[in-house]
Image (tube, rainbow, N blue to C red; front, side, top):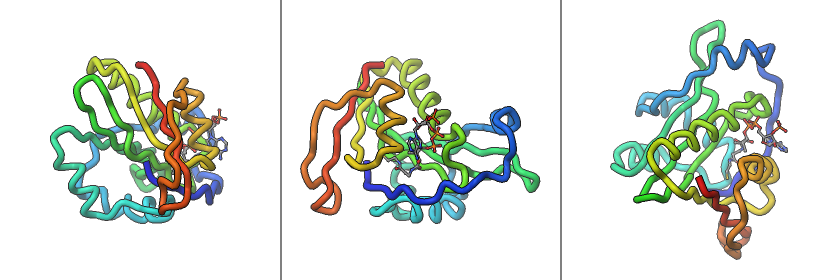
Amino acid sequence: MRNRDESGTAASPISSLEERNKGMKIREMVPQDLEELLPMEQASSLAPWSRQMFLDELAHPRASCFVLTVEDLSGPVLTGFICFRDVGKESELLNLTVHARYRRQGVGRRLMQFYLDRCAAQGIERSHLEVNVSNEAALRLYRSFSYEQVGLRKRFYQGSVDALLLTKRI
Ligand SMILES: CC(C)(COP(=O)(O)OP(=O)(O)OC[C@H]1O[C@@H](n2cnc3c(N)ncnc32)[C@H](O)[C@@H]1OP(=O)(O)O)[C@@H](O)C(=O)NCCC(=O)NCCS
């Protein structure tokens, strides 16, 4: 997975956990989501996926992308997304991003739980991912789902930042 910044944890307009969870929905990503999603990606990553990269994922037979929306006064708002590829009994988590305004409110955890439940239902035995060594938020999230470090990729991001290779038995 790509390098990320940690900026922006502003409060959400959505007030309580109960209210928030009630309105959370996960559905498949469609090309029409990209207008809303690309700025989120741009603001969250030092090496953001381009429109074409998302379109390639959406068209790839082994790839899956889902978005999480919450109900706001104006209707559903796209707050985060997850992309992964399954090959045989293995899955690779390629992208997990939550809009800065909606972080620390359980969106990332909800997307991860959805992904892992789906892996289990599909008979996937292992999930793999790469994460910037200094991405504390993501590392904590993955460790809370019992991902374990199995490797270190030196200078993996932009030729300078190391990546940890994490894996989890489903
Ligand atoms: C990493 C990311 C997806 C987490 O999403 P989120 O919706 O904020 O996460 P959640 O609110 O569901 O938090 C789940 C757990 O993650 C960890 N966590 C999340 N943000 C954290 C932060 N800023 N500092 C420390 N731990 C954090 C905590 O363990 C948290 O559990 P807790 O709230 O019970 O303490 C989000 O910060 C993000 O989009 N970052 C930029 C993109 C990125 O780095 N993606 C991962 C690439 S490998």
